[in-house]
Image 1 (cartoon, one colour):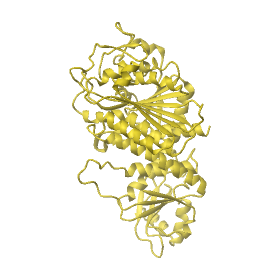
Image 2 (cartoon, one colour):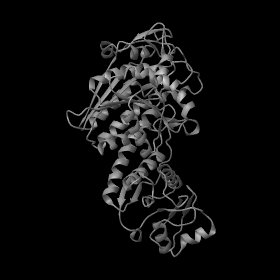
Image 3 (spheres, rainbow, N blue to C red):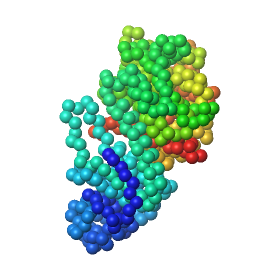
Length: 493
């Protein structure tokens, strides 16, 4: 889709389609009112018939506009006449693109940046248009012999009262939606294509694309030299060689400490010897959504040339049953020297993340944020609306909460209290890799906290938000918008 910022008033427009809003009391938005006058009361007459009431997300397409250079008008309901929340604004945008994406015309002009949205300036409203539209039109066609029909809609003109703020929002929206797209695409690929080696190749290609990026790939021999016994134990059941992917983006001062993102990159998780049930196991290709989101975030940050230093680390492997696979009862020696008793091989994400957290220390990070589809327990606790957030630093966690509210990519913080560490005690090692059936999301984070004691750290459990299931099955690209908003906030702090 092509996007363009336009500042001309509605009186001078020629367009295949104009998108304007109306409120539930049938009050027209500013541009809708002007359009009504231009079209000799056409919109008012439609409202009198009751064809659209203006309730939130209502839509009505007017296909015939007499004596006008505007061929169609889409009316979109805004609900009560008061500032919209960012989430409701996004719902309005989703209703808009859903109503027109199958129509047979080339371009549309959207006048919804004029709508009052709480805590959102013109650039954020513009950015949300691009993000929502791109998310809605995304299709995974790579593995289909007959791809879905392409849309005829190719151009979106976004009306703005200020070209500078409009262009800022457009640039951010394109970068973030591009990052979301790569995160979704990699996650949606089947696991026989998106292997650890394939994921590493994508990281190399990303670094080659941008001037300030460099990728280093550690293979099994490298990890053996580093003593990553925990990470390597997970890969023993797979014929696909494990990779530890490191992407360094150097956009800040040479002496500035980096922000480190760690993304779990399990390209397929059968549970290992603690085999998962067969039903729904196909969705375990999404166990690498943390890794794909790190790639998407690094791409978006590089696209915007952010003046920050950022490191992305992606431990990537498969978790499969095999004669050499890690077994319940095994004791592993992690890179940190801490020993781990494996009580369940399906709690493998924390085993690859803990060694990566230890590895992250060599970058002397300012903060470390890991993101992982780590526990089914987070769905029980929070459902599929927010991602779970835990961490050892209140300021960092508060920054992520604030960024999530702005980006409409929400998180909810859970406690990381010392009492939960008791559930990880082992008779045979320094700690066990699971803490029992209670507080599964919390004890998983408590496990990781043992390897993050030397830096400011936050953990995002995205098992409920990284992909949709059912008829709408597919990756969401979260939490790329959250992480990008966090980075943008850091730039403008």
